[in-house]
Structures are given as C-alpha cells and as structure tokens.
Length: 47
Image (cartoon, rainbow, N blue to C red; front, side, top):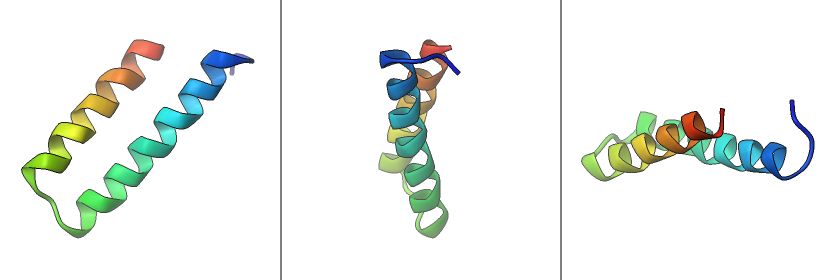
C-alpha cells in the first residue's frame, strides 16, 4: 500500500464503503444505493 495521503484516502473510502454495505444489509433503499455507488466510483478512481 502507498504511504501518505493516498493511503489515508484509501482507508477513509474503505471505512465509508464498509459502513454503507453494513447499513444496506439491514434496510436497503434507493438512497443508500446512490451513496454506495458513489463510494465505489471514488474507490476505483483512487486505484
């Protein structure tokens, strides 16, 4: 894993992604799916 700012951003995106997946498992709705897709898009852009 890279060191510095990029590593920090990857960790933050990973935490958001993880929280959204847990939340979606309990009560899926369309608003969460938009957030989930935005987090996925951001995660892919960091790679």
